[in-house]
Length: 602
Image (cartoon, rainbow, N blue to C red):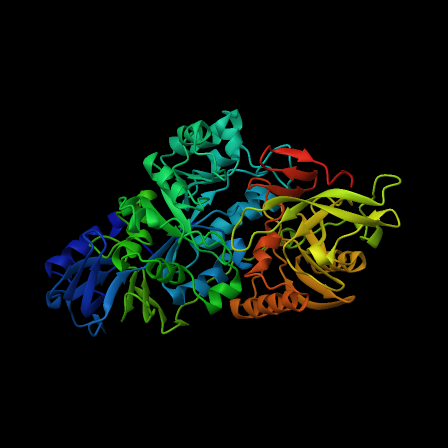
């Protein structure tokens, strides 16, 4: 499947040359703007841009020689002309949207290129799911490059996924037209210990001349980190402090600094550039995970760029981190990332480089958005029925399935508790003394401890794994259930009432996936996600509205964390420390081994 209505450089080179030389008219000329050159970090006033066949043909003080009878003229009126923004690492599924609706959401914010890792759908539908994401991505009017997921499961032996990704799958995907590299290598212990499967996936990617994505979620920057870098990953987005960023670039990696809906890791790392003075061309801005509400209400890469600038970064350096740095990293410097001849004409007109109002967005030479309004169609794939029937709970869940039985005779126990950390992906491994009521261990609202359960939803085994979690602030009788549970994507249910937990789980089984919030026995919010239990193909405005209702419902249950749903959905991510839950039990991610929920009698 090729990108529609867009030709490669060899097919249009004669036209570009003719337009630049004045022998043929341009399709479009942007006239009288300030050219922001990310190659030289300059702002050059009173420049024109000539566009032909979706690419830049000429940039200079006067493009009048490129104007013909049919040339469209766009008056820049002194505004800044900046490259379309690139997201260096992100997951479309985290937006709760299909690629088409995600594109529709971010185009008005100036994002014209995305490097997306669909490992969420890979865990549910395998290579077939990746192919569907890839195919719909290529249908869009902006550039969506796909990284072949590397780790499904993310931690073999600690979780069970709906499908597994193999080295043969990776080798096959490397032949697809929209595959740009290998998705984040989350199984960092596997790389460190030279696991043959992980190394085979990396080798297949490097043989294809493509980029290997990294994911080193450990604070250890000693020999294990060096071993991981030697294993081939070329970038990493899991850094949370300045030392992490410095270590990565010193070892030849690109440091990807993320600002997602709940991950605020730019401010703590960008000081490596703003204060330590390291070469900024080795740093990249990304979002990683942004839900639909953030996209509609706050923005996408423009939000990240504004944030980096507010953290003290020079606007032109921040812009490099969201354009040319990303393009260079993925070997696409001749295609995207700058406004220079031969590149795709992905251009934003803005009147301010600090506040960054996105006033006019051009992608591949066509106007795609103006003043926040999308001006083009974003085509949808015809998603098949099997992609919409992925929530298989088996027997209906009952309140008894969520009972955590105490050791015989115990009146009080010491339990391991997952501790949520606001605005960060890692959790804390906590312990708490909890009461036993009628033989069952109870949560403790005064200590902000409630129950968490992972409900198996791929094979219909009826299995439920229970534990405790702290940090959400829930009060009263409530439950929230989600079929988005990175990365194995079983079902995560958190609640204070076992009855509500059962109702919430069964409700998602009825609708085929999504997020539901129950309070006092009644459903008060629902976001339907029928595609793989992860995404909706409904209009982004509708999904965002339901997502906001869900956030409001969580607040009504006592939770006031920033974007707490993102923390909820990552409670099963068994490759980020310290404590997680999987279908096999409670996982100590500092040791990569299972641990008990109940440590013993208090």
